[in-house]
Length: 397
Image (cartoon, rainbow, N blue to C red; front, side):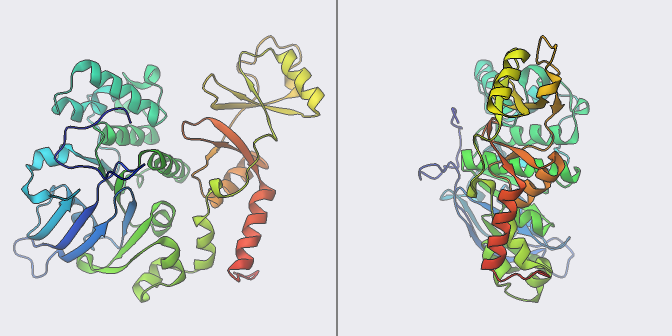
């Protein structure tokens, strides 16, 4: 990140971490005329630079607990510190400007353009116009939206996934140390949801924010969380641990109910593409400005039939077969669009689904969507077989 916020909440000074530690100590929320508190004496330390996921049934208090961190809900009692500062002694408006907030269906201002939506908090912080414009462009690039194409569009002109990307960009625009996310991907289709999850993991690997993420989907919690807090009624903590520890040893029947059947197989989703040896040279990569005859000659000499066409930023565009090149004067619009590319942050389950969709091999992308290699079904199935054997998972597992 190239800019620093004006903030009362300070980030950790650990290398590679821009997030701040959050401590909640005996935090309680009581609403008037209710017999029991919505949240009762909630105590937790959320490490700086980590993703902590609150998962639990509807009405258990997980969203209320998260919203007390930025004081959109005022706690009745208890203390909350962020980066060592007492959040209850910071002006609420100033506090919220230093904590990113992303919600379901993005919550964008409908009559603001994409650029105007992203610039809201920097504007409130009195950044100058030149700095805001540079930051908007940086944020759009970060979440994979071309500023030239999308900056002046209104939210209604975007897909659901694009809206959520803008929502994340807006939440990160002032470079906050903490990001709160309340079921942000719950309203999009499963494929888009998986892509957005991958995007969040990619961003987090680069930014090192402290993220508190609320969901009712345990599989999403396993995929995203460095730690998971399984919450019960009144936000009582049933178990707070790493995903693999919860999958291996659920603390009680409530947690076991969330884990569900096939816990051993769920552990396979903890493995990322970055953890396996995906190929970096199995596919010929060509740029759109290369002449089709040159590409055909290169393919023939290499004994290959397909090339991967990329744009000027090395992002995947299309697969092109050698027989599609004859008589062509340009690679523009030639070939089949790349479907489900995956990132190095994707799980092996995501990789397997993409490989099956793409016909046996999927493109692997890096931190800016650039091609870093490919992965095939043999690689994934070999790894899965090894993990199943290690965990003692039988054929019926």
